[in-house]
Length: 418
Image (cartoon, rainbow, N blue to C red; front, side, top):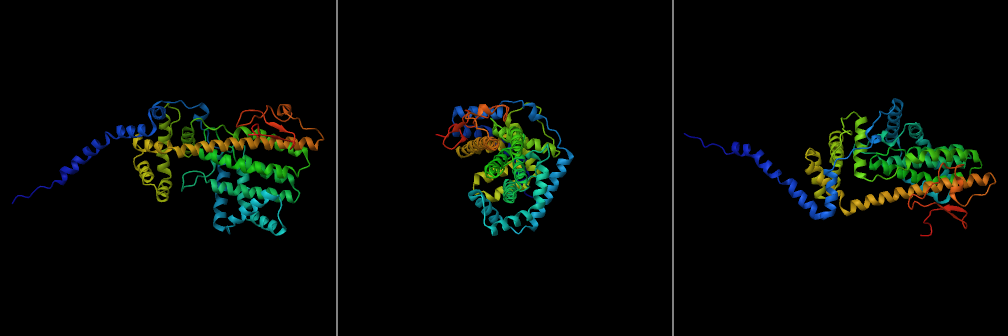
């Protein structure tokens, strides 16, 4: 009796061929779709990101290992942070309430100062570890531990600890120890140092930390009657300026990818920063390593997102990262959307505004120093060179000199009247 042969072996044998046929037109279909979305001119610029090789600047390509004592300090901070999370009684709302109250009034009733002291005491070990870490001369944000859930820096936790440092600064100032208070504020500034080829998260963290710290300079420095101490603070802020107020990258996506690759290289991954390649090639390298090292970050995002398209994109990135078209064109199509670019643009504006406030904080210190020394404040910033600045600080938003406001007796932004 003859047995009828199954068709399944034939179908299985043809399946790879059928899949190949389906993938062959994928590139063309996606290109047509993206071009229709962007329009011919914008699409031509968009394709350069995928087609035109670039050579990275030397300072981006050279990745020196972090010193052993800096890595040890980062590990001690991570350990202290983990211990605090296990033992903490919470109090996040209290921290925010007290921090906001001090920013608004500069003082608190006695029972609130007791609460401030309690919060600072609870954070003593983690603040000591954080201070030791960021005080290291080779510190940069890239050495901070990466959150395995998101595969990036934990902005929320870093900003929370720096706000507690600011509470400590206010407590020290309240008790009359202005030197310790100002050093706590400088610690917040020191923690914002980052490399020019940093990830967008590093730029964001730096902007947030500088934004927090500049708001503390005037209320604390106003209590200080020691011009020598304020000169020391100003001198360090001048030195920190170049490493905490980095110019926003002209190609933020490329900088983000290279920043990730620099971190991964220090963690032992094989990366190629030397070979000229299209910017998308660096994105692709970073994406592959991130998926391998931090797969949970993609799984977590899939659960959170309500967008079917985004879930599909995340799965394609996780399982088909080898295919430049499938992973990166989907990723970049989303980043090309109006909302994503508006977000990046707003991020750049925030960074420029924070740099502006940093300059105004330095100018306030100059005014305070001159007041205590019994000298008049010049009405142009140029007159403060070279005693206080090597070169005249210019408004980061307008590129113009800061102006003197005779009514308030302070330097103001060059576009203050606008």
